[in-house]
Image 1 (tube, helix red, strand yellow):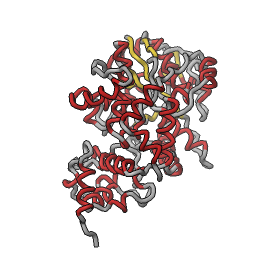
Image 2 (tube, chains in turn green, red):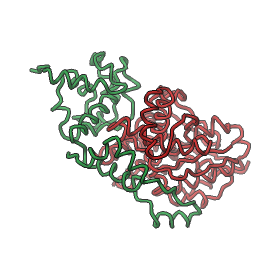
Image 3 (cartoon, each protein chain N blue to C red):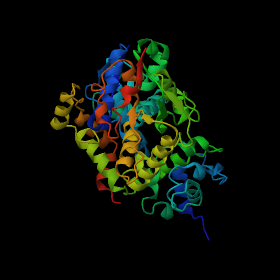
Image 4 (tube, rainbow over the protein chains, first blue to last red):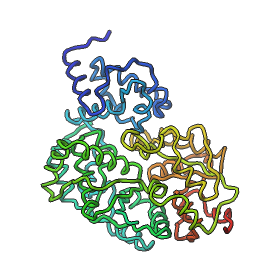
Length: 167
Length: 287
């Protein structure tokens, strides 16, 4: 049996404060999102309809399990196809944000964010890459203003959260 | 025509063929693409799922560079396209959010004003240059070549961000393909995502999605074209790791257009495509 607790209600409210996720309670569980989702077709545990339902019932622990939240490819198929404009993609956004605020982030995501902070790009683009580019008559890659990028990531508290995050 | 070019990390470091063919096609069509000094990662499509305001500030810093240049931005990657278009729209429409983001940017000596547009390269070709002008410049056309298009999600969706192409029935890539004389076609999973964004989470799922598409396109035509580095890498790599590779060439759309404009296959780096596409020029006839 599922019991909706006060904590569950607070959690649901938090998720619904995410831009684009405010129509959660309009979900009538038709399953259009799941039947059209390219990941749900291939991954049994990923069911956008269940994600919406679990948030409605405040089932935070079940949503934060494993890598569930990171299986969404962000393709917006559910966003476009939902007859109720529930936008499960934005619900997933809200859930990932809450997870990070509580100290959880998938290590792969953490690595990407740290690369951006350190190098300004998600990959290293240094002399080696630029020499290859020169060989092809391509101009040097723009040199990112790493200082400005780190300042931005740091000033919102985002980078500190990333660095302190655990799976 | 003059634009600020936002190449994006993945193309810059891994897909020089995409970047170079884009630059060559632009040159042939008299389009000036200027690099954006100081620009870096757009923030990635992941960042906005983790921290909305930080994502906006990261995007806004890049947009502000183009604003200083006084030029609209041209993107090559669907991910960058979504990130920059979405931030640009949100910040233009929400003065409070803009103020909040500008407070963050002030620490870096930058300001987002909201004076430029963001457009994917292929949409610029269609909307700003025009298919007729491209056709006029063509020296060759393809004959007996069937080309499947993969649009990729973030060139089209969310629709309320772009308000352009119908995400259920997009046209721009098929129209560009038809302009080259090749024959575009519809196929069952044409609009399905490449699943590139979860490559780092469940690689096998990405390869499965990729192979499903590649195999389907193989049934109908000769090659698949893409307009995004992530989509391209997915469809190419899924074949490289597969024991039963369909061997379907994956080609960047500017490579296809470039050949018909008379640009040499070497200049378009056609030999870099891992599934052989070097035979493409043989399918052309002079106009």
